[in-house]
Every structure is written in structure tokens, then in C-alpha cells.
Image 1 (cartoon, rainbow, N blue to C red):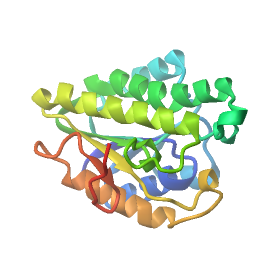
Image 2 (cartoon, rainbow, N blue to C red):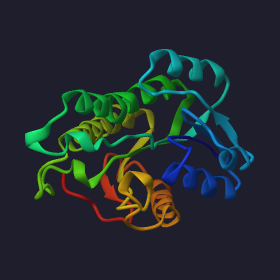
Image 3 (cartoon, rainbow, N blue to C red):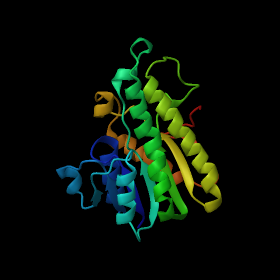
Length: 221
């Protein structure tokens, strides 16, 4: 039995990841700002009121997890703001907030949890194909795109720095998934979660630091 810690678990992909990991007999620690009845009913450990942009919240989580050893950390928490999409209507506070959550928050939490991850452990960062510079042919979405480029770069650096310790990092695009974030357009969270977990299962010394589509395609940076 492996122990997974998953962030952003109160809806969408995060909640489905919890369901599928738990159904395979693994221990799940679900981290979110606010839980709900469905998440609580899964029979997993739920850590609520954790804002990954808050040093205090992250430190409190680490303190509560003393003695726990993590096999897999899945950084799924993220936000998108529609107010920074277009060049003629930029909202710099919105752009900054997306950086704080999507990039800084992910790095903050990962750094804090590293002492709990031993050799053979895995870290997954759920980023987005919208953070691919080469794949950007439509422009716009400044805050979201820029924050996802940043977190993908963090994942790549982590893969290099942690490789000598035997900790491997996957940088993953979940696909266009039907959630509130996408106005319920795309594939089901069930399909996305299944594909993401398959990529995490395949993560090893040779492919650490790869930017994958959840279906297995290696994506351009």
C-alpha cells in the first residue's frame, strides 16, 4: 500500500484522483481549502483549510503529518482567472494571484513536504498544455499561461535536483477536462484521472522531468 497526498481535492480531477487511488487500496491524504460531504465519505484522510499560498497553512499541514512517509505527491491545486485573458483588458492582480497559486503555491508545498518523501518517491505536477510556449498559437490567457510555464519550469528543476535522491517528477497536462474550470467542456474527470495515474505509475529514473499529455504523448516546451 502506497501513501498519496493530493491537493485541490474538493472537486473535479482532484476528487476523482482520490477516488481512484483509494479504490486501489492505497492510503490517501486529501488536501483542500474546503471539504464537502462526498470527499469526507470516501474513507480517506482529509486535511481542510489548507491554502497553498499561505506559509502558515503549509507549515501547519507539515506539522500534522509528522511521522508520515509519502510515496506520491500529486500537486493538482490550481486556479484560472478569466479577467487576464486579453491584451486590451489585463488585470495584473489576477495575473499575480494565478502565479501565487499555480506556481509559487505548488513549489512552496512541494518544498515543505520533501522531508516526507524518501528514495523511490514520486512527485506529479498537474500543469497545462497552455503552458507550452511552442504550442501557443492563439495567444491571450496571460495569467494562466505564464503561471503554468512557471510551474512546469519548477517541475523540471525539481526533477534535476531530486534525481540523485531517487525522487522522480512528472509534469502532466490532464487534457481538456469537463470541470467548472473549463465550463464543463471536454473529457470526464474519470478518464483524465485514469490517464494521469497511468503516467505516474510509469515514472522512473529515465523519464523523470518529462512534460506529458495524460494520454502519454510527450509535449513540446
